[in-house]
Every structure is written in C-alpha cells, then in structure tokens.
Length: 408
Image 1 (cartoon, rainbow, N blue to C red):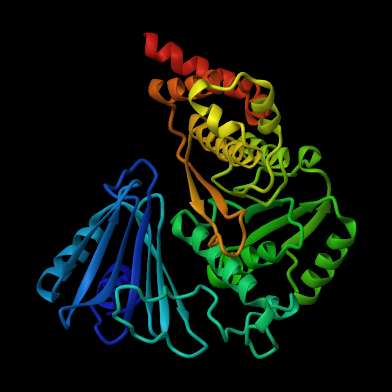
Image 2 (image 1 turned 90 degrees about the horizontal axis):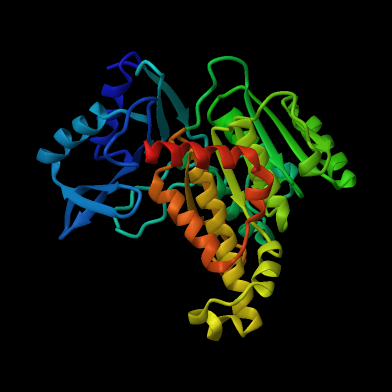
C-alpha cells in the first residue's frame, strides 16, 4: 500500500489497533450533501473489549455506535464512499490528512510527529490530541513567549496555549480548509490585538497544512503592530503582514477567503462580519467581546410583558442583550447564505467572553421560515441589529428575493 491510494491508506490507519488514535470526516464537497456534518471515529473499551466508536453529528445532535472489528471495516468503507470534503486520522506517530478536490480526487498530506508519540488511551473521556502538542518546537510559540526554546509551555502561559489549540481545532473542524484554485489563501484578522491567534493561524495554515497563505492583521494600535512586524520578520514569515486601520475603514487588495474577528468590541464585531459577507468569504470565525449597541435599544424599547422580571435587573438585562446580539448575528449570517453556529470557544472558567460564531459559506438561499424568524425576533424586541444596518441593501435584496420566491 502506497501514498498513491490515499483512501486505502486512511482505511488501514483507522483499522490499525496498535497506532490509531482518532479520525474525523467532515465538510461537504461542492454540490454534495453528506448525511452528516461530521463523523468522528476513535477506539474505546466497552466491557473490557476494544471497539471503534463512530459518532455521527447531524448539526443538532450526536448519535454513537460502538462496533467490533467485524463491523468496523464496512462502516469505514461507507464513510469513505460519502462526499465529505476532508478526512484526518491521528496516529500515535503521524497524522494523515485527505482533502478532496472539486472533482473528488483525494489529496494526501502526511505529518510526522517530531515529539513523543501520542499515547493510546481507550477511556471514553480521554483528551483529544492537540494540534500543537506540548513539547512541539513551533518557533512562533517561543517568539511570543508561550514556550521555552525547547518547546515546553511556560507555567503562566498554559491558558494561552490551550486557547491557541482550541481555536485551531475549531478551524480544522470545519473541514473547509483547502488551497484556493488560484493564488494563495487570503486571510484577514480584523482587530488582531496581541495577535497570538493571528500567528497561530498562519503557522497552522502554512506549516501544518502546507497551504500558501497571505495573511493580514488589522488593528488601530500602531505600537502593537510594529512589534508584530518585528516578530514576523524574525520568523521569516513574508506572507504575514500588519496594517493600521479601523475595521470599518480597512480596504483589502483582494477579498479574503477567511476572516477572523476575535474579541472585537461592540459594533466592531458587526463591522468585521459585514466586511466578511461583502467579500463573500468562505469562512468566518468571530469571538464577540462587549455588546452595547443592542443594549441601548433594549433599554429604550417597550419591555415584552413576560420578560419584565428579567429586564428589571441590570445584570440580567446585559446578559440577555449579549445573547440576543449574537443570536441576531448568527441569524443574519444564515440569511446571507452561511451555515452559522454559536459555539463555546474556551471554557467559561477561563473567560466569560467564551462564545465563537463560526460560519461556513454554503451559498444557500434563505427559506421563508428563516425570514419569518428574523422578522418576528425584531418585532418582539423592538430592535434593529447593527449588522442589518451595515449590510443595508445587500440584506434587503436577499429578503426581497426570498419573499418573491415564496409568493410565486
């Protein structure tokens, strides 16, 4: 068996009892619709016997099956026959990644582990393998002060290290990371701030995934950007640049394939989402920070009768405003053709600002039911989301076309 047959290689890896750790099938090829958003496979112990656990996620819930060797091979064959966009298998000593081209041709990438092999653990609640394991000598982590020169995570940087790994996992989980048909992958981080996740994303795309990438970090803090430029130069990363600008004023030379907006405050998050929609970006990752715009509208609007006991308390009004703001954002992204979901970014014990809006451009037209949801939410709360204002005619046109289609 050789690298010329990636699917056979992946099948053998998953069925390798001595080395297999975990596999994930996810994403959809253009024009195709697998029955599952994501399927993960991992070995577990059931009553003392090894089984392969298949977890099928349909976008709402997981369904799990534990299969023995006589059943697992056929189930792996079924997964390989489905039109997933990507598959990855973590082994004790390497990682196999398969990305499918638009024509369905499998493209294999093999990544050998330079650090200690991942130990085989069959417990149900074992930790997932990290994309950047402790001890990995990633130069950018040392340059940012997260690790020592030999790759050990500093004691006071454990939280930052976990955050970096979790963010990269959220990116990888989409199954949508692939080089564009022409030119480099274009990524913009709007409101990059301290830029730890900017550097981590660039490293992941170029060093881990081997994708030619042109990435720009945008922020208003010139002193931070000067430091980031020096770090990028020190690392020899010519494809990573930084530009001083407000999000609303930033003009990219080319539309971005991927947009990051991590902890952009208040309406800056909406500005970043609007820029991404305007660019028709393939992927959006947004971790909102503070929310004020909708809070002010809630204070001025008549309080819906059932919610008076909630909104008379300032802290509860603030939390409800945060929730409504992000719900509106995700709903608007769906109206604009994105498959949007709100996820936990990092555990709440690390930061109360722990939500991530992750969106994949599916180019799907909104349904009448989705439009009705949006209009009902606006009418009930008596508010207008700032993202609607920013999108303006683009959102109005989408809503109008969908209504005309429903009436036809």
